[in-house]
Length: 444
Image 1: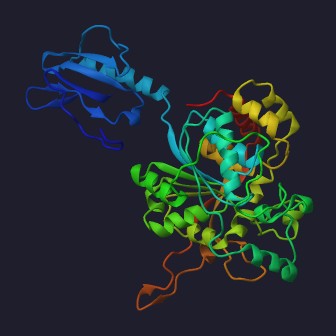
Image 2: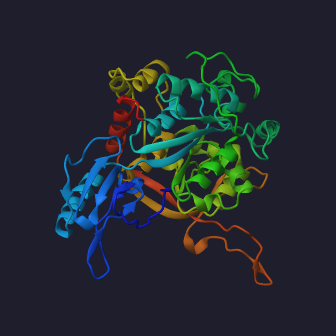
């Protein structure tokens, strides 16, 4: 039975179906009870029902062969209600996995980008359909290799890694360096920066140079598909069931939207780590440029396209809430006590104690109670090529820009959209969840 379908199917004499048991339904004047079948993924209970309800009995057997009832069970109307109540209780205890695609600038080894992916990879709540890579904190070819090796070391080689955009849609490295002379510099340039200048986590190299990896070279290979088409294919295969988790520059997502205009609307929504509004901090990266944030800055046009797309829901983790988090030595020490592969990977390769921005975006999607306050804003990115190029733009409802019209038709095809902007969090709840996931055994 196809995912997402909800058909009622008659269970007749000697018939056999697989699915999830539903309440009996009377049929005609004879009051016959038939057993319906729902998509098993909706209830999380898989079994086979065999028998003849016209004679008032059936066998009910788990799909893997384990008998749920070892003998014939009479399924009169009253009895069927009891069976249904039992299965509902069991279904409530079984957790249906949520499908997600991770889009990340996966610099490594260890560190925030890898840990953020691991939040979703380690959670039993998720089915990670794949990881798409995009340049940002490091070049995409190098990120692919670090991420493949991370998956090997934490025992999750079942998840494909899909190469994505190496360069932004419009902005170039040369332009960014010219802007430094005209408009001043920022503390962080990611793949365009250099460790010696403290503007990157690695020494500068060009895009297609992949340095030797300290964690070892991966034995598994990346997908031969490109990120944009992988995103479209997976969302089309699971309409309205996939969430996009985007914690790097938004180039891959913008390309998917440009190729398939229905892409965004066919998802469950998108979770974005990006943007900065008015962070309360003395961090020099944000004190003088409070609207500057690296992910949006790296590819402003991509962020502009993504924020104006027709998503069912957009959740935004900005700098403002991210700086209220911190990965501490105490947290790392506790994680290191676990002998599980994810914990040991972090113990060996994570040395940076900094904000947990990408990790917060992932954890809040898993457990919305982590976010204790949010506000609805209309969000966009400045795509004018001046000092504010790449800055975050926000409006309340009463001040948002509206499309001008000519002959009754909008001049702007995609208007700004409302966004759930997170503002406050339950720090203890978040920290506890993060540590527990990093200490846990590999999720399957």
